[in-house]
Image 1 (cartoon, each protein chain N blue to C red):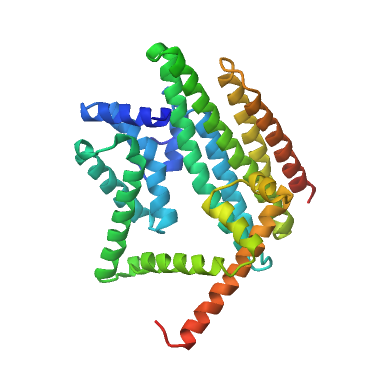
Image 2: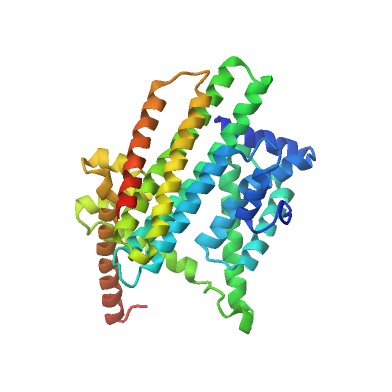
Length: 187
Length: 190
């Protein structure tokens, strides 16, 4: 078990015994993670993100004794947050839209994102080998420019611009696919 | 000190800045470094998005900044957690082997954060080169922040390595400092 996991396991154990300081520490530790999912991942408004934030930690508190693997707390909190974000988007769609809520995101957005991700996967295969590899290394494997440069024998100082160019090509492929889908009458 | 926020306040960044001043073990300087890199990414995002009308490459910069922000968030968490674990071990709550392992984890977390800062500095330099000159200053300041972040990580690693000498980490950091310095010079020369 990593040192990080040990800290989490210890904190959760203290939370179970009613240690409020440990609970506050646990909430602080994951607060930015939860907000990042709400606001960057699901584009929730500040108010909705705050509501989801409260709901997430109420659930975590209520289910502290049900967690099977304390060390995987981060993954579990991420899962709960994503589920509650989707609930929030669906609820926004069902409610009558008021003037204040006109910017509420479409609940189908999440599904569209999944479809887009699958399209991106397919289009990556149509990119040049070099482009596909650079994008894969940066966005999927989270490699640094230095690591990509070393692996592909490319100067690290040129990676950022290469990624931008490869993304433009990917965008064109995706736009082309989108146009052909519309032309063929697919929905 | 400014207005107080409770632990569940939604303004997480503001809350973090306030908590840095508290006497608790964490958040501490490692977390502050992660925050600085996040700020740098926000400045890059600002410069790129404000240049969108005249710069075709701005979209690619925004996508890379988004990805790096997520990495820095994770890295900052790892730095904070590993620091807590190392402090507990140093306080005598763990054996000698455990102490060494936890210090090694703290060093690895800082190395990862330095790597993200190095990459962010290069993204800042690229932004500085391509963005609308009116918004270049934001990208340049972002590069300077990253320079400070990498050097700060190197300092923190040096402190952690006092009990576990390791040439690999210091060597990696030396290269990162040189690399981020080159990126910063490039941003400043635009």
